[in-house]
Length: 177
Image 1 (cartoon, helix red, strand yellow):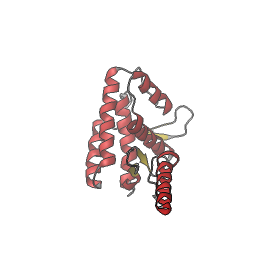
Image 2 (tube, helix red, strand yellow; image 1 turned 120 degrees about the vertical axis):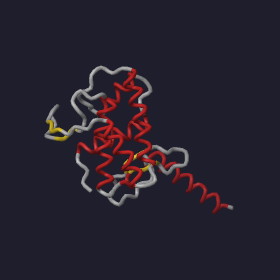
Image 3 (cartoon, one colour; image 1 turned 60 degrees about the vertical axis):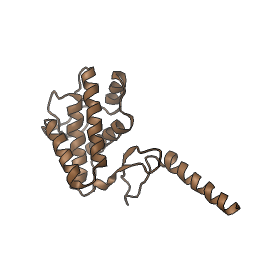
Image 4 (cartoon, helix red, strand yellow; image 1 turned 90 degrees about the horizontal axis):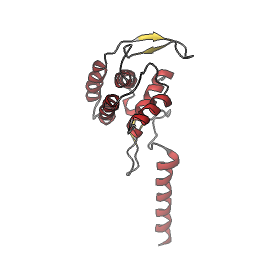
């Protein structure tokens, strides 16, 4: 499945929101800037509250037990965001589609674009790419974009390496006994 730039950016924002959601307004502003989210006015406490609620809903999609359950969650998420697809070419980007309505809140913006990105994965038969880290003490979300869909850890240099080193040391201890 070809994942275009816009979908990838929306997926990255969803994963970042799930793994390191902003704790305060300054963190929320940093999230907006880090992901280049356009069309967002001044942020308020209600935006932070709405984004925290949205974070929980995205988590439910990642943890859904079936495509049907994920589809039901995504349908509700996207419908609640007032999805209004439109073509735009802002900020030096070529033509692309925004799914949020003009004047949408940050949470509506994220729900529309992130919800549609997740829906594209489901429609493409790729929902299994939505994963949680296999490290027992982690559980961070990630989208497995590897060619063979074999990624198991949120970050191979931290969680994956830590578990591989622990397994190696355990084998060495067994061999020494």
